Image (tube, rainbow, N blue to C red; front, side, top):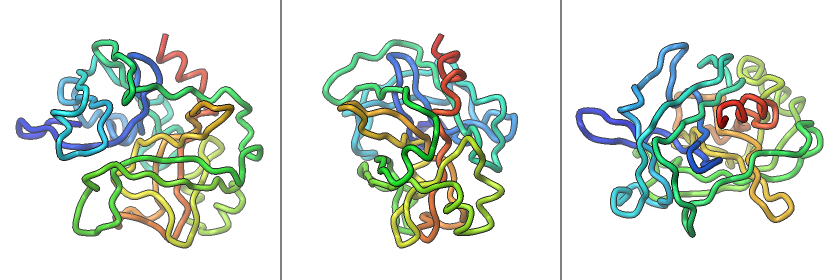
Length: 229
């Protein structure tokens, strides 16, 4: 959530990765090298499934700081990461749990064809900016070669530190899903493999005719750990 004219509005989703840290997309908080908000203009709301009653059902936390990856550029999904440090530790419970960081191989070919889950407030309705209730979708990972062959436009937004997922027949992410985690169930635990970054077409709510692009957590594990230290 961010503050505008004294009121908080939804901005992006994120994933809790420790008692004090949330990871989201860099473009949610920064444009180029310029932050879009001060830390005092941002709050994190945990444990909610509806944007209509978030004040009464969610756990609100202030922000001590946030930092985007040093290589972040708003025109690409490459390292589209920001780590938010909360001003207090959160208590884990039934509705608030952390995701595990990806600890397996960072080789994308190993997981091509497998599915991950993305949960966010993206809406397919062109008349609304966000969905009122949390939605989730399972998306299969495709190879970089398949993604690049599907449309030449992907060459400008993908890199060795991104991956594509979804399909080209009506399954994908929407605008309100930015920053949401791409989570995979591994050995009974939810592991964070990616962060929802960009769609090929930016002038529509949902680009369901193309693959969705995710910043690859596995390629920046050292940087993330440095943010948690």
